[in-house]
Image (cartoon, rainbow, N blue to C red):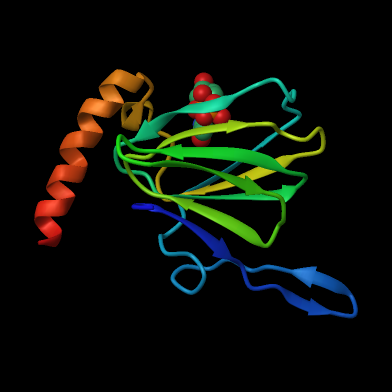
Amino acid sequence: MTNVSLVDLKVIEDARGKMIPLEYPKQLNFPLNRIYYIYDVDNNQTRGCHSHNKLDQLLIAVKGEVNILVKTPFEEKIVKLDSPSKGLYIGPMIWREMFDFSEDCVLLVLASELYDEKDYIRDYREYEQKALEYFRNEETNND
Ligand code: TYD
């Protein structure tokens, strides 16, 4: 799916346990400016429900599991994050919703930019209009 990919993160394992390093540009395809993590979310809660104009993010369920809906005006899918070694890259202009958090879920988010409310699109109709234009331009640029 455009601007979305599920990434298998390389695990370094020895007798002492497992570790996953994330470093730009080796395992991360964007330079990191911010991290945050979401936890203690009731199973009936949905978070996200927005898109970003510019942001790149990598989502990792470092503990527990959660479902992520990723959507454009043209396609959508649900990705289950249930392992610290799975990362979901979400680029610009993707509508996302996070739901079905397990009780123990800790969802780590790595982001390319500092927090900026102006980069958010929180209204789906507004998102749809902007996304149609964005993906039309992407198509033209890729011709
Ligand atoms: P919000 O983006 O609504 O969370 P979610 O996408 O998980 O539903 O953010 C919740 C609140 O936290 C909102 O008031 C903005 C604030 N916030 C920050 O201050 N910094 C951040 O990096 C993020 C992601 C949110």
